[in-house]
Length: 491
Image (cartoon, rainbow, N blue to C red; front, side, top):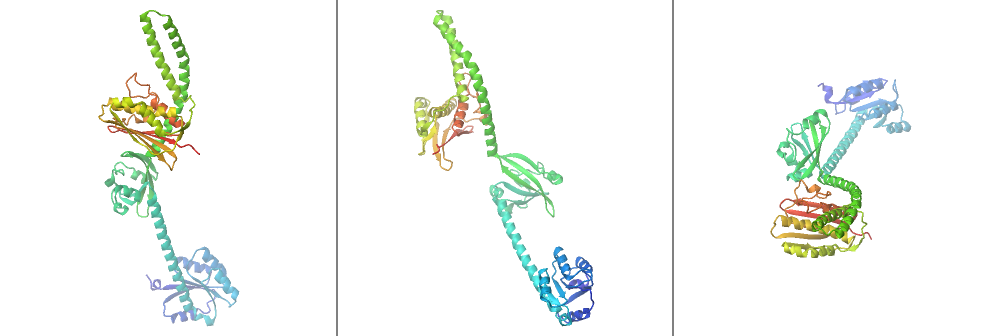
């Protein structure tokens, strides 16, 4: 490094060499050490500025290749930060005003009287320039800190799990949502290998981090963690020191459940149309079979033939009942709605089954809210409650559960203006591999000849027709709970 590199460089751009010696002399008497450089044209000046670090620039109003005002314009366009002092030909106020307007730090008259003041003018300009840079740096630092705080707040406010992993499989950043689940502070997780958290994050042998970094292509997949399903999106992230990947884990359990529920609703709607057509086609010849069987029964005196006709009639009547259930499932009957109390409807059904509940030693529990009346078809809702109650009864009896219990709970959801009915039992529960099929038509776990498999399908259709929702939760060995949601009547 030369001696001139350790001191501030001041550049003079002036087409006339007159006064250069006087300027050098005045600076030589100044206590601050400066390195002075003189050029004759704006072009030479820009070459020096481009090549070297210039702390201050004096430019003459008149130059061989452009005037000082054009020079100021170029300086502004090139975003040169060094202060520029215009050396004006005369003291005209218009010249000074124009120079300051075009970006000059100061404007002085080029004369024998002013050459001696150039060092102090330089010092003053440099002081203002340094103060300006310091203020801008402070402002910029505050802005960066503020933006970092905002970024961190946004990063931590996101409920999805977000973390950054470098190419050594170490965590570089972790948001609060993930840290909270892991029971740690985000800073405690930084530096840990992702294999230390293999219950949440894929271990290196399984993950695609290297491929994402190599190809630069995002990778999205799903992973089951406990009872939840997560969608994991991995994106490449290139830092100055090393490549990394950013991982976003979104819990899609509820979304998948709603998607399956929507698909199930579409499936039931399609089946409803199919079932309706089939039921009507069967109903016509079935009516003829029943009618002619009755006529034959009236004319036959042979006992053996009479027994056979009774078997035909029994089978035909059973087919008729199935057809009626099919038509109910396909919603051929228009509901007759009135304002009803859900608590009263449940009480009526429990009273209706009271004898058999006592015989089977099944205890009934009730936990009712004081709830408003609901606009429903009471017959249809009773059918839904009865279907669920009968299923619970049979499950408890068939599994020989001691101290069988069925609990009815009603709640008023004020925020969503709907009634929630919960029917729980302590039966054997429903296996997870079939729970998604229990609302399907003809699906049954009962022995052949003891059920049509339409009870819960019909119940589902009734609740949907009431603009409500019916769901089920079950754990094998612990019991089953049905949830029924019915909106209140709009006033």
